Image 1 (cartoon, rainbow, N blue to C red):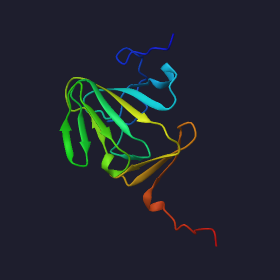
Image 2 (tube, rainbow, N blue to C red; image 1 turned 90 degrees about the horizontal axis):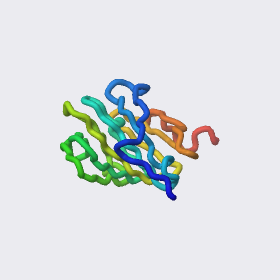
Image 3 (cartoon, helix red, strand yellow; image 1 turned 90 degrees about the vertical axis):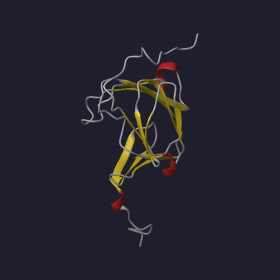
Image 4 (cartoon, one colour; image 1 turned 45 degrees about the horizontal axis):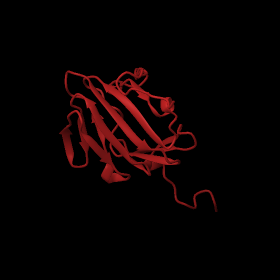
Length: 156
């Protein structure tokens, strides 16, 4: 029999190690069901909490699935309030920039489904930084975009 995980009941790890505003308990579903090509994470957002800063990625595509509550979605076109059952796709690149948070008094429960190509890059426009992931998905490097050097730097 295949492994089964329930999106509502799977034990979520506390997000308390994250700074205020980003303390969202979560559970990675992929490892629970033997997945490797796709990632699915369920986040529980209390009032004033967000999943992560405003960002976009290469080459990953992500989908947001609202399971419960009314999270706020920030994207290039502005902000909107979502409802249970809503699904939104964030394609790779700036057109897919997004931030998901909760401004309501009740909790919001959301699932994020994503492709898992490596290496991967996330760009954070608000803080003008870049994150790079390689290998098994661990964050390898995060740096301000201003740290960029010329292609030939150090070579000649």
